[in-house]
Image (cartoon, rainbow, N blue to C red; front, side, top):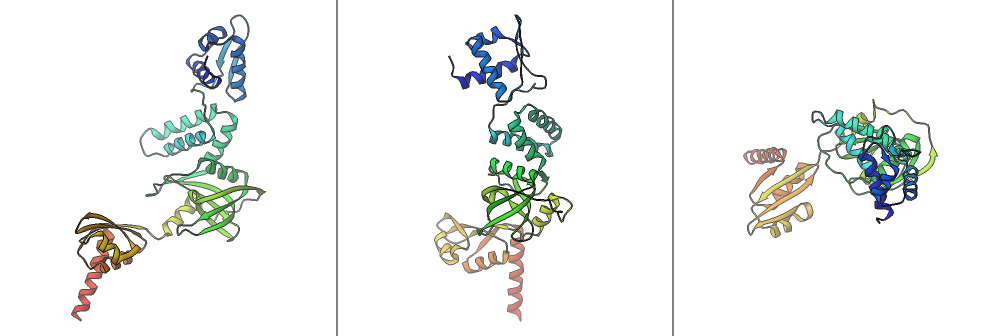
Length: 320
């Protein structure tokens, strides 16, 4: 006989297959006694699954009305992942996907056990989508998302360590307001108590997250909504350029001249590929000048324009 866990999964599957199962037939299909079947049904109910029983000679079991979808056997993180995926699809540009995703999300949440439904509803209610070009990273812990969402909903202060883009680690105490989803990134909009101002935090850079239990009265956000607040800050960030250049120089020689400003990939004994990330293209042009070798700019186009501008200045200087 199968162990209890696998038998429970089989029972859930059978209850979905038919709207009504006579008790004896269902017990036979599971190869258990009617008494064991009743205990398994009770376990499902304790987990929150709506199983109805009909007593008597023709008695049996069925899923309650409204549970037309397959019952969900998921843990907290899986429930959050499901909600995140459906919510992302609800804002998809693919024709027909958005409307279907909204319907599916509503149905799935309806048949979830109350324990999971509370976490998913908090995440959905406290998240604002923002369309933005770029931002491809994922890797956010679902448990962190639900913790933040519940704190936003309950107006409860959070404490966490935050690692800035430059690597600096600081301790923060905040009054969380909303989560904003930007592509596959997540931002927390919150009032920073230590800096006495509103801030946005990338959720994947939060560590040591903890709910403090301290409640607060929500402040007025200095923007139309949380998505607009995040958009304004992203637009004001220095742009990061991904530089790629073919250099007529062996990688070892190029690396010796430039140092740690860039990385070099050996292509052959006379050529290498330079890569660097910078917020200022002037640094990239300076690095290319230090190489004292011929090169070909592969990207970005702005770097080629910058090289031409520098070259024109040097030509003018020679003629003066």
